[in-house]
Structures are given as structure tokens and as C-alpha cells.
Length: 341
Length: 228
Image (cartoon, each protein chain N blue to C red):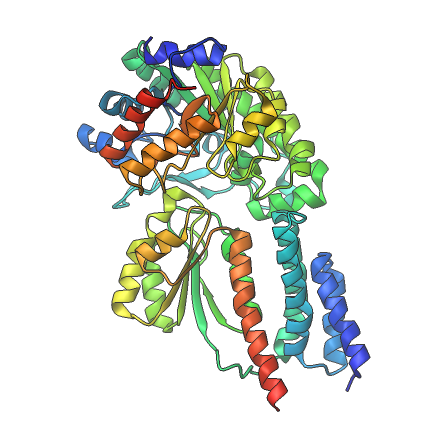
């Protein structure tokens, strides 16, 4: 069973030899970037470089997937925001939004551009997906990700305002989130057509560290359901931070799998959602994988598996300076221990 | 001078105004305090800050979430804006200035703004650099203002990595400067490893830490008053 078969069978709900070790979020490494002779700031703007970097984590370490893009600004940029890729940064800085689309409450009535699928870097992403598929698509599953409606809304307007309005004027926010859902569906369809095997929807802005489970259910769940219904391929809903109380709602949104981070008590979530639910998680991709020792990595991976994850999968993007010995320890431990359950 | 009952009533109004994120109540309460000649510092600490302490508790108990806290903060500022011009220079034995900002690569500033609010309340001079701040700007601003405290915030793991560089540079030039780091990906271990003096992992913790500090100032003031 190769990595691709393992991951696809997992999504299908079929039996597999061990849990896979993959991600639906960014997982490029500095080692990979250096080996290719690239600069971090450059890989966001060039399909060939993006695809080659994404493939390198599989090629160099055996990480069981290929994922593009690397940053979180693709949709907002296509909607008209201006991004900053920090071209002159010495170290690694992820692109951010420099200029928002909505500046105050009165500008919330946004329309989706008719040519959204051809704006910003979406054509570049289509090309990167095709290149990545051609390169490693027979060996591993190829994935991509989009933002969730609330997280995207928090990029195109002031998060401060969005949060307060989600309380004071929930109707207005619900309307905006519905438009965001439509935009996200357009982007998701493009990635689907380009050939990804699975798509992760990253709704990290709606974590229970920020929003109450009640607001999540009333305001965030409906547009998420709308998106999940439209995605034809396998889908994963990712939310970071505290998620134990909203895990059942995450399932109700209708993804193939949910993804949670280290703050989630997976043993409890497993009990709540049952044996058949696909729960991906939940190691700390910085404090364990980058800053920890190989032994801490192994312990953490075993605990994830003992708690009942369906796939060993990071809580967020893997930070690129991950040491080789740690990523190797993780993959080795999944190989040894991942079939125990 | 207002009598004690009246005073208590006004403080309650300010406190509840913050808790119930009622900006108008805070404005009214603050204006009454000014009109009645009540000490503005007292109105801030025993009214507005008391309210924020309760908000911190409600957040911890998961009755309040971030949207509520932001609205409570607006209410607090509504009162503070009226009271501040009437504040006497506080003689707390602690006075100071702080440089605060979110590091380059990060555009999140909610936690940073909550901490800033508590420094505003405590009468600190706050040099707010905003968000997505180039690292060298923290160092330059600390030197320019000779601030005792620098607060660095990052919401994303992906932007936190710049922090040790800033800490190192500031400590090299000014070893006595205290540095507090904050944001979801930070931890006590990282704070120790990087040589920071304090940390807060999220907005609630940042709020709690800042409340703790300001509450400590309040205690000092009460002790001082008791001695008189």
C-alpha cells in the first residue's frame, strides 16, 4: 500500500495498515527550499517553485502528501485585497494582507467579481496543482486548502469590527459570510478541477478561544454547511485552538474529516463522535515538532495515536525550520506505532 | 464633595457599565463623577478596572468570549476618555512608559490592544507601534523613549520567530528593560529560552496579566491610603 492508496482508503473509510502521516495545510521546509535554491518569499509567486517546494517534503522525508499553496492570502487577494509577501525579509515571513477590502460597516455589501476564478493567484494555483500532480500524484495524495467564511471575512475587514458585529448585528455578518461562502466555493471548484484529491477548509478564526459555541452554531455553521455541500472531493474542516465543545458542530458541517490541534482533548472528542468519525490531529507543529527533541516528538505522536486520531496530522502549518531529525523521528514513529490501534 | 453612598453608586454604575458593555452608562457615570468632584483615579480603579476584573473572570468561566470583551473595552474607554483629563499624577512608586506592538508578519492586534488598554488605565505612557512592525523599530523606539517595558505580540506561530531577535537586541543595549511577549503560540518555556521577562498566551491571559499588574498598583495605592 503506498501513501496515496493509504490516504485515499482512509477517506473512503476502508481498512488501512496504519494511520497515515500527512497534512492538509502548509508543510514546506527550509531544508527543501534551500536544496532547491529558492527564497521563501519567491515560492508564493511562481507555480513551478511552489509545486517543487511542496513536493520536497515528501521527496526528502516521506511526508505522505503534497499541498499547495503555502500562505493564507490567496482568496482575499483574488477578492481585491493587496498582499505583502515581504520580498526583502531575511528570514521567513508569511504573506499578510496589506490593504483590506471593507473599511467600515457600511462597506459590507460586497459582490463577488464575475471573473474571480481568474483573479489574483488562482490561475497560478491551478498550474501549481497540475505540476504537483504530475510530479508526485501517483505516489501521494495531493491537497489544497481554502479559508473558512469567517476567517476570510476577518481578512477582508477589520477583525475587531467583525467580532463586535457578529454580536451586535449578526444578520449583517451572516449575509457577509454567505457571500464569503460563495466565493470560497468558486475557488474550491477551481482546485477540484485542477485535480486535488482532498481539500481542507481552514476556519481558524472561529475557534472557541474567540467565539462562543452558540455563535459558532448560529453564525458559522450555516455557511460552512453550504461550502461542504458543494465540495465533491474529500474534505477536511480544520479549526485550531479550543474545539472540544464545537467538535460535534464541525461534524455537522458535513466534511469527510475534521482536523483539530493540540488544545483539543482527542480522547474525549473520539468518545463523543464515535469510532467511525475521521479525526485528524493533533500534535503541536512548533513547540513539539520544531522546538522539541526527537524523543518528545515520538512521545507526542504515540499519544495522538493512543487518543484515537485517524491520521497523524499537525495542528497548523508546519514551521519551515523544522529540524530533519524531528520530522524523521515523527515518520519513523508513525511507521512503527501507527498500526497498533 | 459627594458622600460615600453617592460615590459607591457611581463606582457601581461604572463597573456595571463595563461588564454590560454599556458605553452610555460609562459616559454618564464618568461625567457624574467629574461633576461631583470625585477623585478621577478612584473612579477609574474602583469603577472601570473593577468592571474589567469581572470581565476577565467571565471570560475565564467561558461566559464571555472575545466579541464581548471588545465591547467591554469600548465601554471602558468611553468612561476613561472623560476621566483621564481629571487624573492627578498618581504617586504609586511605579510610573512608566511602555513600547507595544505586533511583530512583523502579523496583522493581529486584539490581544495587543487589550494589554494596551490596561496600561492606559494604569496611567502609563503608551507608545503603540501598531501591527506588522519591523523588528528594528521596537529597538529604536525603546532607545528613543527610554521605556522600562516592551511588549511584543504575535498571534501566529509563523510570525513569532522574530521575537528572540528583538529581545536580544534590546537587552544588549539596555539590560534593565523588561520584555513581555504574548500571543497564542508563545509559552513560558519560549519566554525563558528567549530571555523575556513575562508572557501571556492569549488575549484573556494578556488581559489577566495586565489586570494583575494594574490590580497590584491598585493595592499599593490602597495600602498607601491606609497608612495616611
